[in-house]
Image (cartoon, rainbow, N blue to C red):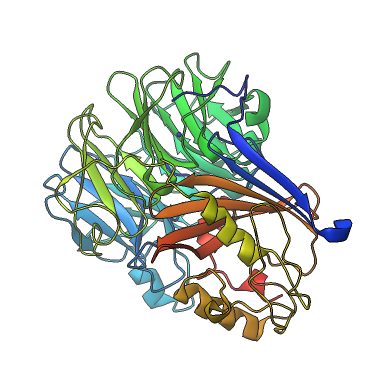
Length: 532
Protein backbone atom coordinates (compact mmCIF):
# COMPACT_ATOMS: atom_id res chain seq x y z
CA UNK A 1 0.00 0.00 0.00
CA UNK A 2 2.61 2.51 1.00
CA UNK A 3 5.77 3.90 -0.12
CA UNK A 4 8.10 3.14 0.56
CA UNK A 5 10.60 0.76 -11.31
CA UNK A 6 11.81 -2.01 -19.54
CA UNK A 7 12.26 -5.16 -17.60
CA UNK A 8 15.55 -6.22 -16.06
CA UNK A 9 16.21 -9.54 -14.34
CA UNK A 10 18.28 -9.81 -11.17
CA UNK A 11 19.19 -13.32 -12.25
CA UNK A 12 21.30 -11.96 -15.12
CA UNK A 13 22.38 -8.48 -14.06
CA UNK A 14 23.94 -6.82 -17.08
CA UNK A 15 25.35 -3.53 -15.83
CA UNK A 16 24.92 -0.57 -18.15
CA UNK A 17 27.62 1.51 -16.55
CA UNK A 18 30.68 3.65 -16.98
CA UNK A 19 33.21 3.08 -14.23
CA UNK A 20 36.19 5.37 -13.68
CA UNK A 21 38.71 4.46 -11.00
CA UNK A 22 41.57 6.73 -10.05
CA UNK A 23 43.81 7.57 -7.14
CA UNK A 24 45.29 10.69 -5.69
CA UNK A 25 49.00 11.03 -6.36
CA UNK A 26 50.74 8.77 -3.91
CA UNK A 27 47.69 6.53 -3.62
CA UNK A 28 46.27 8.50 -0.71
CA UNK A 29 42.79 8.99 -2.14
CA UNK A 30 40.63 6.77 -4.31
CA UNK A 31 37.50 7.85 -6.16
CA UNK A 32 35.27 5.61 -8.24
CA UNK A 33 32.70 7.36 -10.42
CA UNK A 34 29.89 5.21 -11.78
CA UNK A 35 27.23 6.54 -14.14
CA UNK A 36 24.70 3.77 -14.50
CA UNK A 37 21.07 3.34 -15.34
CA UNK A 38 20.45 -0.20 -14.24
CA UNK A 39 19.09 -0.71 -10.71
CA UNK A 40 21.37 -1.67 -7.90
CA UNK A 41 21.09 -4.48 -5.40
CA UNK A 42 22.94 -3.05 -2.42
CA UNK A 43 21.36 -3.13 1.00
CA UNK A 44 19.76 0.04 2.29
CA UNK A 45 17.60 1.24 5.12
CA UNK A 46 13.87 1.16 4.69
CA UNK A 47 12.37 4.35 3.42
CA UNK A 48 10.16 6.48 5.61
CA UNK A 49 6.57 7.16 4.85
CA UNK A 50 7.23 10.84 4.69
CA UNK A 51 7.87 12.24 1.23
CA UNK A 52 10.66 14.82 1.13
CA UNK A 53 9.53 18.41 0.95
CA UNK A 54 9.13 19.85 -2.49
CA UNK A 55 9.35 23.43 -3.62
CA UNK A 56 6.74 24.77 -1.20
CA UNK A 57 7.97 22.76 1.80
CA UNK A 58 4.78 20.70 2.04
CA UNK A 59 4.32 17.04 1.26
CA UNK A 60 1.64 14.37 1.02
CA UNK A 61 2.61 11.05 2.53
CA UNK A 62 -0.36 8.70 2.25
CA UNK A 63 -3.54 8.52 0.18
CA UNK A 64 -6.60 6.29 0.58
CA UNK A 65 -9.61 6.31 -1.73
CA UNK A 66 -12.74 4.44 -0.58
CA UNK A 67 -14.56 5.54 -3.73
CA UNK A 68 -13.83 6.68 -7.28
CA UNK A 69 -14.55 10.28 -6.33
CA UNK A 70 -13.70 10.21 -2.62
CA UNK A 71 -10.12 10.29 -1.34
CA UNK A 72 -8.23 11.30 1.78
CA UNK A 73 -4.54 12.29 1.84
CA UNK A 74 -2.26 12.75 4.84
CA UNK A 75 0.03 15.79 4.68
CA UNK A 76 2.69 17.79 6.47
CA UNK A 77 2.96 21.50 5.81
CA UNK A 78 6.74 21.84 6.02
CA UNK A 79 6.59 24.09 9.08
CA UNK A 80 7.37 21.34 11.58
CA UNK A 81 9.25 18.10 11.94
CA UNK A 82 5.98 16.12 12.12
CA UNK A 83 5.29 13.46 9.54
CA UNK A 84 1.59 14.16 9.37
CA UNK A 85 0.08 17.55 10.22
CA UNK A 86 -3.35 17.21 8.66
CA UNK A 87 -5.64 15.58 6.11
CA UNK A 88 -6.88 16.73 2.71
CA UNK A 89 -10.06 15.29 1.21
CA UNK A 90 -12.04 15.36 -2.02
CA UNK A 91 -15.54 14.14 -2.79
CA UNK A 92 -15.61 15.13 -6.46
CA UNK A 93 -12.73 13.20 -7.97
CA UNK A 94 -10.12 15.82 -7.17
CA UNK A 95 -11.75 18.81 -8.83
CA UNK A 96 -11.38 20.41 -5.42
CA UNK A 97 -9.49 19.33 -2.31
CA UNK A 98 -10.26 20.68 1.13
CA UNK A 99 -8.34 20.62 4.40
CA UNK A 100 -9.77 18.73 7.37
CA UNK A 101 -9.01 19.37 11.06
CA UNK A 102 -5.72 18.06 12.42
CA UNK A 103 -6.48 14.53 13.67
CA UNK A 104 -4.16 15.02 16.65
CA UNK A 105 -5.30 18.47 17.77
CA UNK A 106 -7.17 17.15 20.83
CA UNK A 107 -4.17 15.11 21.95
CA UNK A 108 -1.88 18.09 21.50
CA UNK A 109 -4.28 20.39 23.35
CA UNK A 110 -4.31 17.98 26.28
CA UNK A 111 -0.55 17.48 26.19
CA UNK A 112 1.45 20.29 24.52
CA UNK A 113 4.59 18.13 24.74
CA UNK A 114 3.00 15.51 22.48
CA UNK A 115 4.98 15.62 19.23
CA UNK A 116 3.67 12.39 17.75
CA UNK A 117 2.36 12.43 14.22
CA UNK A 118 0.56 10.19 11.75
CA UNK A 119 2.43 8.28 9.07
CA UNK A 120 -0.28 6.33 7.22
CA UNK A 121 -3.98 6.43 6.48
CA UNK A 122 -6.59 3.79 5.53
CA UNK A 123 -10.23 4.60 4.75
CA UNK A 124 -12.43 1.53 4.24
CA UNK A 125 -15.57 3.68 3.63
CA UNK A 126 -16.18 7.31 2.60
CA UNK A 127 -16.85 8.20 6.25
CA UNK A 128 -14.51 5.93 8.21
CA UNK A 129 -10.73 6.35 8.29
CA UNK A 130 -7.92 5.11 10.51
CA UNK A 131 -4.54 6.80 10.93
CA UNK A 132 -1.44 5.36 12.59
CA UNK A 133 1.86 6.95 13.49
CA UNK A 134 4.72 7.56 15.87
CA UNK A 135 4.53 6.75 19.55
CA UNK A 136 2.06 3.90 18.85
CA UNK A 137 -0.58 6.50 17.86
CA UNK A 138 -3.84 5.20 16.36
CA UNK A 139 -6.66 7.62 15.44
CA UNK A 140 -10.08 7.00 13.91
CA UNK A 141 -12.89 9.07 12.41
CA UNK A 142 -16.47 8.03 11.62
CA UNK A 143 -17.65 11.35 10.17
CA UNK A 144 -15.38 11.89 7.21
CA UNK A 145 -12.55 13.46 9.17
CA UNK A 146 -14.45 16.18 11.01
CA UNK A 147 -13.62 14.63 14.38
CA UNK A 148 -10.99 12.06 15.37
CA UNK A 149 -10.65 9.87 18.43
CA UNK A 150 -7.60 8.09 19.78
CA UNK A 151 -7.78 4.28 19.89
CA UNK A 152 -6.11 2.23 22.58
CA UNK A 153 -3.64 -0.42 21.51
CA UNK A 154 -1.53 -3.01 23.25
CA UNK A 155 1.74 -2.41 21.45
CA UNK A 156 4.82 -0.98 23.20
CA UNK A 157 4.76 2.71 24.15
CA UNK A 158 7.82 3.56 22.04
CA UNK A 159 6.74 1.64 18.95
CA UNK A 160 6.25 3.66 15.81
CA UNK A 161 3.59 2.39 13.42
CA UNK A 162 4.33 2.86 9.73
CA UNK A 163 1.35 1.52 7.77
CA UNK A 164 -2.24 0.37 8.15
CA UNK A 165 -4.65 -1.67 6.02
CA UNK A 166 -8.39 -2.13 6.59
CA UNK A 167 -10.14 -4.79 4.48
CA UNK A 168 -13.46 -3.88 6.18
CA UNK A 169 -14.78 -1.06 8.32
CA UNK A 170 -14.14 -3.09 11.48
CA UNK A 171 -11.05 -5.16 10.63
CA UNK A 172 -7.69 -3.42 10.40
CA UNK A 173 -4.01 -4.35 10.71
CA UNK A 174 -1.13 -1.95 11.44
CA UNK A 175 2.62 -2.62 11.30
CA UNK A 176 5.69 -0.85 12.58
CA UNK A 177 9.19 -0.95 13.94
CA UNK A 178 10.76 -4.05 15.46
CA UNK A 179 8.27 -6.31 13.70
CA UNK A 180 5.26 -4.84 15.49
CA UNK A 181 1.78 -5.84 14.29
CA UNK A 182 -1.48 -4.77 15.93
CA UNK A 183 -5.01 -5.56 14.76
CA UNK A 184 -8.65 -4.91 15.54
CA UNK A 185 -11.84 -6.73 14.59
CA UNK A 186 -14.25 -4.18 16.07
CA UNK A 187 -12.97 -0.91 14.69
CA UNK A 188 -10.76 -0.44 17.73
CA UNK A 189 -13.63 0.15 20.12
CA UNK A 190 -12.08 -2.13 22.74
CA UNK A 191 -8.40 -2.21 21.82
CA UNK A 192 -5.97 -3.01 19.06
CA UNK A 193 -4.36 -6.30 19.99
CA UNK A 194 -0.67 -7.03 19.48
CA UNK A 195 0.13 -10.01 17.23
CA UNK A 196 3.41 -11.94 17.09
CA UNK A 197 5.06 -11.46 13.71
CA UNK A 198 8.15 -13.47 14.68
CA UNK A 199 10.22 -10.65 13.18
CA UNK A 200 12.71 -8.17 14.61
CA UNK A 201 13.10 -6.12 11.44
CA UNK A 202 11.09 -2.94 11.04
CA UNK A 203 7.96 -3.50 8.96
CA UNK A 204 7.18 -0.69 6.53
CA UNK A 205 4.05 -1.73 4.65
CA UNK A 206 1.03 -4.01 4.93
CA UNK A 207 -1.68 -5.16 2.51
CA UNK A 208 -4.78 -7.19 3.44
CA UNK A 209 -6.80 -8.48 0.48
CA UNK A 210 -9.27 -10.24 2.84
CA UNK A 211 -10.14 -10.06 6.53
CA UNK A 212 -8.02 -13.14 7.23
CA UNK A 213 -5.15 -12.78 4.76
CA UNK A 214 -2.46 -10.11 5.11
CA UNK A 215 1.12 -9.60 3.97
CA UNK A 216 3.68 -7.27 5.56
CA UNK A 217 7.14 -6.29 4.29
CA UNK A 218 10.10 -4.34 5.61
CA UNK A 219 13.83 -4.09 6.19
CA UNK A 220 16.26 -6.86 5.37
CA UNK A 221 13.98 -8.54 2.84
CA UNK A 222 11.33 -9.11 5.52
CA UNK A 223 8.09 -10.69 4.28
CA UNK A 224 5.52 -12.17 6.67
CA UNK A 225 1.99 -13.35 5.98
CA UNK A 226 -1.07 -14.60 7.80
CA UNK A 227 -3.96 -16.61 6.41
CA UNK A 228 -5.85 -16.95 9.71
CA UNK A 229 -6.55 -13.38 10.74
CA UNK A 230 -3.27 -12.94 12.55
CA UNK A 231 -3.46 -15.96 14.85
CA UNK A 232 -0.18 -17.00 13.23
CA UNK A 233 2.26 -15.15 11.00
CA UNK A 234 4.76 -17.05 8.84
CA UNK A 235 7.96 -15.67 7.40
CA UNK A 236 8.36 -15.96 3.64
CA UNK A 237 11.69 -16.02 1.85
CA UNK A 238 12.61 -13.61 -0.90
CA UNK A 239 15.17 -15.13 -3.29
CA UNK A 240 18.64 -13.87 -4.10
CA UNK A 241 19.62 -10.31 -3.34
CA UNK A 242 16.05 -9.46 -2.38
CA UNK A 243 16.53 -11.43 0.84
CA UNK A 244 18.56 -8.55 2.28
CA UNK A 245 17.01 -5.60 0.46
CA UNK A 246 14.84 -2.84 1.89
CA UNK A 247 11.21 -3.39 0.93
CA UNK A 248 8.98 -0.32 1.04
CA UNK A 249 5.56 -1.18 -0.37
CA UNK A 250 3.10 -3.97 -1.16
CA UNK A 251 -0.20 -4.40 -2.97
CA UNK A 252 -2.35 -7.50 -3.40
CA UNK A 253 -4.86 -8.48 -6.08
CA UNK A 254 -6.23 -11.29 -3.92
CA UNK A 255 -5.09 -13.64 -1.16
CA UNK A 256 -2.63 -15.39 -3.48
CA UNK A 257 -1.34 -12.67 -5.83
CA UNK A 258 0.75 -9.77 -4.45
CA UNK A 259 3.49 -7.42 -5.67
CA UNK A 260 6.21 -5.82 -3.52
CA UNK A 261 8.27 -2.70 -4.25
CA UNK A 262 11.67 -1.87 -2.79
CA UNK A 263 14.94 -0.04 -3.10
CA UNK A 264 16.38 0.86 -6.52
CA UNK A 265 13.31 -0.42 -8.38
CA UNK A 266 13.40 -3.92 -6.92
CA UNK A 267 10.06 -5.69 -7.31
CA UNK A 268 8.81 -9.11 -6.24
CA UNK A 269 5.66 -10.92 -7.25
CA UNK A 270 3.80 -14.03 -6.12
CA UNK A 271 0.76 -15.84 -7.47
CA UNK A 272 0.76 -18.73 -4.98
CA UNK A 273 0.31 -17.02 -1.65
CA UNK A 274 4.01 -16.39 -1.13
CA UNK A 275 5.27 -19.96 -1.40
CA UNK A 276 7.58 -18.55 -4.08
CA UNK A 277 8.43 -15.02 -5.19
CA UNK A 278 9.58 -13.77 -8.58
CA UNK A 279 12.36 -11.14 -8.39
CA UNK A 280 12.53 -8.44 -11.04
CA UNK A 281 13.10 -4.73 -11.52
CA UNK A 282 10.61 -2.12 -12.66
CA UNK A 283 13.27 0.04 -14.33
CA UNK A 284 12.93 2.88 -11.82
CA UNK A 285 14.43 3.98 -8.51
CA UNK A 286 13.01 3.35 -5.01
CA UNK A 287 9.32 2.39 -5.02
CA UNK A 288 7.57 3.90 -2.01
CA UNK A 289 3.93 3.11 -2.83
CA UNK A 290 2.04 0.18 -4.32
CA UNK A 291 -1.61 -0.66 -4.96
CA UNK A 292 -3.49 -3.22 -7.03
CA UNK A 293 -6.81 -2.73 -8.81
CA UNK A 294 -8.85 -4.39 -11.50
CA UNK A 295 -7.71 -7.44 -13.43
CA UNK A 296 -4.29 -8.04 -11.87
CA UNK A 297 -3.16 -4.45 -12.46
CA UNK A 298 -0.69 -3.22 -9.84
CA UNK A 299 0.73 0.30 -9.81
CA UNK A 300 3.97 1.38 -8.11
CA UNK A 301 5.17 4.92 -7.39
CA UNK A 302 8.44 6.29 -6.10
CA UNK A 303 11.38 8.60 -6.56
CA UNK A 304 11.41 11.42 -9.11
CA UNK A 305 7.78 10.92 -10.07
CA UNK A 306 8.14 7.29 -11.08
CA UNK A 307 4.93 5.39 -11.85
CA UNK A 308 5.09 1.84 -13.17
CA UNK A 309 2.41 -0.74 -13.99
CA UNK A 310 2.43 -4.53 -14.06
CA UNK A 311 -0.40 -6.85 -15.08
CA UNK A 312 1.41 -10.15 -14.57
CA UNK A 313 2.59 -10.19 -10.94
CA UNK A 314 5.82 -8.27 -11.57
CA UNK A 315 6.97 -10.30 -14.59
CA UNK A 316 6.88 -7.25 -16.90
CA UNK A 317 6.52 -3.54 -16.22
CA UNK A 318 5.44 -0.45 -18.15
CA UNK A 319 6.69 2.97 -17.07
CA UNK A 320 3.91 5.55 -17.09
CA UNK A 321 4.32 9.34 -17.66
CA UNK A 322 3.48 11.05 -14.35
CA UNK A 323 4.70 14.41 -15.59
CA UNK A 324 6.32 15.33 -12.28
CA UNK A 325 9.87 14.99 -10.98
CA UNK A 326 8.66 15.13 -7.39
CA UNK A 327 9.01 11.96 -5.33
CA UNK A 328 5.69 10.10 -5.08
CA UNK A 329 5.02 8.47 -1.73
CA UNK A 330 1.66 6.73 -2.04
CA UNK A 331 -0.94 5.64 -4.60
CA UNK A 332 -4.56 4.48 -4.41
CA UNK A 333 -6.69 3.09 -7.24
CA UNK A 334 -10.36 2.74 -6.25
CA UNK A 335 -11.20 1.24 -9.64
CA UNK A 336 -9.52 -0.32 -12.68
CA UNK A 337 -9.27 3.11 -14.33
CA UNK A 338 -9.17 5.68 -11.53
CA UNK A 339 -5.91 6.29 -9.61
CA UNK A 340 -4.51 9.01 -7.36
CA UNK A 341 -0.84 9.43 -6.40
CA UNK A 342 0.61 11.91 -3.90
CA UNK A 343 4.04 13.03 -2.82
CA UNK A 344 6.60 15.77 -2.25
CA UNK A 345 5.70 19.39 -2.84
CA UNK A 346 2.06 18.52 -2.08
CA UNK A 347 1.79 17.04 -5.56
CA UNK A 348 -1.37 15.13 -6.46
CA UNK A 349 -1.61 13.46 -9.87
CA UNK A 350 -4.64 11.50 -11.00
CA UNK A 351 -5.58 9.23 -13.89
CA UNK A 352 -9.00 8.25 -15.18
CA UNK A 353 -7.80 5.97 -18.00
CA UNK A 354 -5.83 3.27 -16.24
CA UNK A 355 -2.61 5.29 -16.00
CA UNK A 356 -2.14 6.21 -19.67
CA UNK A 357 -2.38 9.91 -18.82
CA UNK A 358 -2.10 11.79 -15.53
CA UNK A 359 -3.37 15.23 -14.50
CA UNK A 360 -2.06 17.26 -11.61
CA UNK A 361 -4.68 18.49 -9.15
CA UNK A 362 -4.27 21.78 -7.26
CA UNK A 363 -4.96 21.71 -3.54
CA UNK A 364 -4.82 24.04 -0.51
CA UNK A 365 -1.13 23.25 -0.01
CA UNK A 366 -0.28 24.52 -3.49
CA UNK A 367 0.48 21.19 -5.18
CA UNK A 368 0.99 21.47 -8.92
CA UNK A 369 2.88 24.75 -8.73
CA UNK A 370 6.58 24.61 -9.42
CA UNK A 371 6.73 20.83 -9.57
CA UNK A 372 7.08 20.36 -13.30
CA UNK A 373 3.37 19.82 -13.94
CA UNK A 374 0.58 22.10 -15.06
CA UNK A 375 -2.51 21.92 -12.85
CA UNK A 376 -5.50 20.41 -14.60
CA UNK A 377 -3.67 19.49 -17.80
CA UNK A 378 -2.35 16.21 -19.16
CA UNK A 379 1.19 15.45 -18.15
CA UNK A 380 3.52 13.86 -20.62
CA UNK A 381 7.15 13.98 -19.55
CA UNK A 382 8.72 10.59 -19.12
CA UNK A 383 10.41 10.33 -15.70
CA UNK A 384 13.80 8.75 -15.30
CA UNK A 385 15.30 9.70 -18.65
CA UNK A 386 18.92 10.70 -18.78
CA UNK A 387 19.67 14.31 -19.58
CA UNK A 388 22.53 15.35 -21.84
CA UNK A 389 25.62 16.21 -19.82
CA UNK A 390 24.38 14.26 -16.82
CA UNK A 391 27.99 13.37 -15.96
CA UNK A 392 28.44 16.95 -14.80
CA UNK A 393 25.93 16.22 -12.03
CA UNK A 394 28.36 13.57 -10.84
CA UNK A 395 31.20 16.06 -11.09
CA UNK A 396 29.27 18.58 -9.00
CA UNK A 397 28.69 16.03 -6.27
CA UNK A 398 32.33 14.97 -6.45
CA UNK A 399 33.46 18.55 -5.93
CA UNK A 400 31.30 18.80 -2.81
CA UNK A 401 32.13 15.46 -1.19
CA UNK A 402 35.86 15.21 -1.93
CA UNK A 403 38.00 16.77 0.79
CA UNK A 404 40.89 19.12 0.05
CA UNK A 405 41.44 20.11 3.69
CA UNK A 406 44.59 22.24 3.92
CA UNK A 407 45.98 21.24 0.54
CA UNK A 408 43.88 22.80 -2.24
CA UNK A 409 46.54 21.90 -4.83
CA UNK A 410 45.27 18.33 -4.77
CA UNK A 411 43.18 18.72 -7.87
CA UNK A 412 43.93 15.59 -9.89
CA UNK A 413 41.21 13.36 -8.49
CA UNK A 414 40.34 11.51 -11.64
CA UNK A 415 39.76 11.80 -15.39
CA UNK A 416 36.42 13.52 -14.77
CA UNK A 417 38.27 16.51 -13.38
CA UNK A 418 36.75 16.39 -9.90
CA UNK A 419 38.28 19.26 -7.97
CA UNK A 420 37.45 19.81 -4.28
CA UNK A 421 35.40 22.95 -3.70
CA UNK A 422 36.41 23.41 -0.04
CA UNK A 423 39.79 25.16 -0.27
CA UNK A 424 39.67 26.93 3.09
CA UNK A 425 39.93 25.91 6.72
CA UNK A 426 36.61 25.84 8.54
CA UNK A 427 35.84 24.59 12.01
CA UNK A 428 36.55 21.07 10.84
CA UNK A 429 38.80 21.67 7.83
CA UNK A 430 36.12 22.24 5.20
CA UNK A 431 34.36 25.32 3.86
CA UNK A 432 31.40 25.23 1.48
CA UNK A 433 30.86 28.57 -0.25
CA UNK A 434 29.52 29.50 -3.66
CA UNK A 435 32.02 32.33 -4.09
CA UNK A 436 34.88 29.80 -4.14
CA UNK A 437 33.20 27.91 -6.96
CA UNK A 438 31.46 25.27 -4.87
CA UNK A 439 28.55 23.96 -7.03
CA UNK A 440 25.79 24.27 -4.44
CA UNK A 441 22.50 26.16 -4.37
CA UNK A 442 22.14 29.27 -2.24
CA UNK A 443 19.85 27.50 0.21
CA UNK A 444 22.30 24.61 0.65
CA UNK A 445 25.13 27.08 1.23
CA UNK A 446 23.15 28.73 4.02
CA UNK A 447 22.28 25.39 5.58
CA UNK A 448 25.86 24.10 5.48
CA UNK A 449 27.19 27.24 7.11
CA UNK A 450 24.59 26.96 9.88
CA UNK A 451 25.56 23.36 10.53
CA UNK A 452 29.29 24.12 10.47
CA UNK A 453 28.83 26.86 13.05
CA UNK A 454 27.50 24.32 15.57
CA UNK A 455 29.45 21.25 14.46
CA UNK A 456 31.71 19.42 16.86
CA UNK A 457 34.11 18.06 14.28
CA UNK A 458 31.89 16.10 11.89
CA UNK A 459 31.68 17.07 8.24
CA UNK A 460 28.06 18.16 7.64
CA UNK A 461 27.93 16.30 4.34
CA UNK A 462 29.00 12.81 5.40
CA UNK A 463 28.48 13.06 9.17
CA UNK A 464 32.03 11.71 9.58
CA UNK A 465 35.52 12.99 10.29
CA UNK A 466 38.01 10.97 8.24
CA UNK A 467 37.78 8.98 5.02
CA UNK A 468 39.94 8.12 2.02
CA UNK A 469 37.80 6.19 -0.50
CA UNK A 470 34.59 7.07 -2.31
CA UNK A 471 32.25 5.57 -4.89
CA UNK A 472 29.98 8.02 -6.77
CA UNK A 473 26.96 6.62 -8.65
CA UNK A 474 24.54 8.44 -10.94
CA UNK A 475 21.14 7.03 -9.96
CA UNK A 476 18.96 8.87 -12.48
CA UNK A 477 18.68 12.19 -14.26
CA UNK A 478 16.16 14.33 -16.09
CA UNK A 479 16.72 17.63 -17.86
CA UNK A 480 16.79 19.62 -14.64
CA UNK A 481 17.19 17.18 -11.76
CA UNK A 482 19.55 14.32 -10.93
CA UNK A 483 20.15 11.95 -8.04
CA UNK A 484 23.64 10.78 -7.20
CA UNK A 485 24.63 8.24 -4.54
CA UNK A 486 27.96 8.51 -2.75
CA UNK A 487 29.33 5.61 -0.70
CA UNK A 488 32.12 6.18 1.81
CA UNK A 489 33.98 2.87 1.61
CA UNK A 490 36.04 3.30 4.77
CA UNK A 491 33.14 2.43 7.05
CA UNK A 492 32.52 -1.34 7.05
CA UNK A 493 30.13 -2.32 4.24
CA UNK A 494 29.86 1.30 3.16
CA UNK A 495 28.05 4.44 4.21
CA UNK A 496 25.81 5.74 1.38
CA UNK A 497 24.13 9.11 1.03
CA UNK A 498 21.90 10.37 -1.77
CA UNK A 499 22.49 13.83 -3.30
CA UNK A 500 19.85 15.85 -5.14
CA UNK A 501 21.39 17.95 -7.93
CA UNK A 502 19.50 20.67 -9.83
CA UNK A 503 20.32 22.16 -13.23
CA UNK A 504 20.18 25.94 -12.77
CA UNK A 505 21.69 28.70 -14.86
CA UNK A 506 23.44 26.22 -17.13
CA UNK A 507 25.15 24.43 -14.21
CA UNK A 508 24.49 21.42 -12.02
CA UNK A 509 24.24 22.49 -8.37
CA UNK A 510 23.91 20.23 -5.33
CA UNK A 511 20.72 21.17 -3.44
CA UNK A 512 20.11 18.47 -0.83
CA UNK A 513 21.40 15.19 0.60
CA UNK A 514 20.26 12.44 2.96
CA UNK A 515 21.10 8.87 4.00
CA UNK A 516 20.16 6.50 1.16
CA UNK A 517 16.51 5.53 1.49
CA UNK A 518 15.84 8.09 4.25
CA UNK A 519 14.66 11.37 2.68
CA UNK A 520 13.07 12.29 6.02
CA UNK A 521 16.64 12.85 7.27
CA UNK A 522 17.52 15.37 4.58
CA UNK A 523 19.94 18.15 5.38
CA UNK A 524 17.15 20.64 6.05
CA UNK A 525 15.38 18.52 8.66
CA UNK A 526 18.03 16.40 10.36
CA UNK A 527 20.56 18.18 12.53
CA UNK A 528 21.52 15.69 15.22
CA UNK A 529 23.86 13.39 13.29
CA UNK A 530 25.69 16.34 11.69
CA UNK A 531 26.77 18.03 14.91
CA UNK A 532 27.93 15.13 17.00
